[in-house]
Length: 65
Figure (cartoon, rainbow, N blue to C red):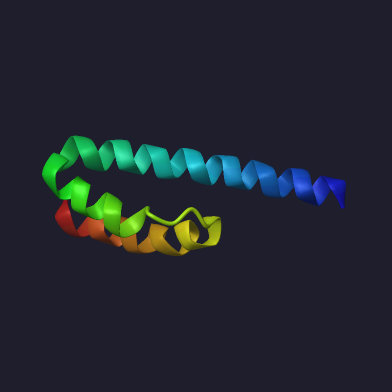
């Protein structure tokens, strides 16, 4: 059980890191658009939500590049 908890925490840490990374990349690419997207995508701090938003965000990125 403790192992699972630890594992879960590792995943969350990586997710948060990824989220930050994406934000940085996006901010570098579209500073003005980013302000809107930040409000839109990252106003919630539920990790599951972040997970669900990631594909959408990646699709969005892919669409622009």
